[in-house]
Length: 475
Image 1 (cartoon, helix red, strand yellow):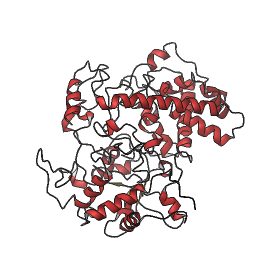
Image 2 (cartoon, one colour):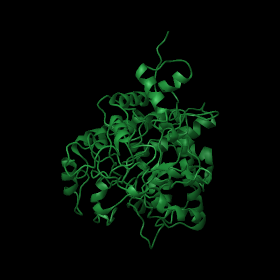
Image 3 (tube, rainbow, N blue to C red):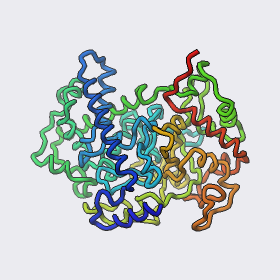
Image 4 (cartoon, rainbow, N blue to C red):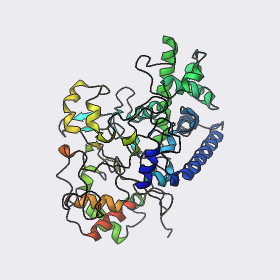
């Protein structure tokens, strides 16, 4: 934390450089991940040129090419995959960031978001956001705050794919048409035209398109679409932008991202057996003592074992002071202030979306207050997937917890242990800091489970069995 705070202080001024807010431990990792992204893109492009691909393979590979293309960000340096790589279950691939900043730098490397990257594995199963009156809960959508509803494109995942390209703290494009403009210059343009038609990029681009699209977002309020197109050209660009998102969703819905190849899957198919510790952990997971599978559902009749119910909860997680977002309270070199509230910022979660202009349903706005501090329940599939044993993953929306052991211990003892005092060395072990949003905290299903340390460890062992890529022993 000290190293991160020092780095943040050095980047508080307007003249912050790319390296000011990136911990030293992560800089080499970033280069390695970028090389791997480029390798995967080149390999995919070679496959995409095959004349034997059927339509399913074409649209899936096109989505993959877009997903791994760094040229589609404002500074041509960040792809969707930068925060979502396969070796970690399509979540953050940088151990050095997971254990420090948690949030990942955007194309403008001094800008960070306020949350940890979510996993994209099995995200394609999340439905269009809706309110289930009988259940008394919102179900579906994408992002931690459910704001990608899916109502417009009938796909929450496709609408999620349109978020990062235009987010100032992520890929940073200033206009949705800029993604279409950049893609029109890429080597897979003809593949897209073959799928969508010759009109997909038939836009009369202004002479200053390169200059406008090289300027980081957000667009000024007085000119929300600064790439000035005629009405017909704007309509073509928007349609293609939607098709780009649908292609990404097709890739993210493929078996490459959702393989169902964990040890758990093999055990359920009768092709493997749990260890005694995994079996005991699974029994605990399903028991009334822990309530785990009430939110992380392990399937039922006609139901895939997705280990989420697609609702939202407030678990009482403490704020994470290591997030650089708290320090983004002054204009950067482009005049953008990501977080005017600074250290006073409280992440509103789903409630923030419901109370914002982004909410498409006026009836939902009345429920905004009761959803403050709630976040979408993620699947626990691939929750331990990592490229090496010493790789650090971050957990919860703000990455406050750094291991599955810490997660289970938090669920077990949140209410049983005292509140930490400033500088308490027992933090996460014998005490917990106060929750960030206590008013809407879930008080029924966790907090004082009375599990022994052995039982905590058994739950961890079961969760590890949900990692895809398991190879059963041959008999």
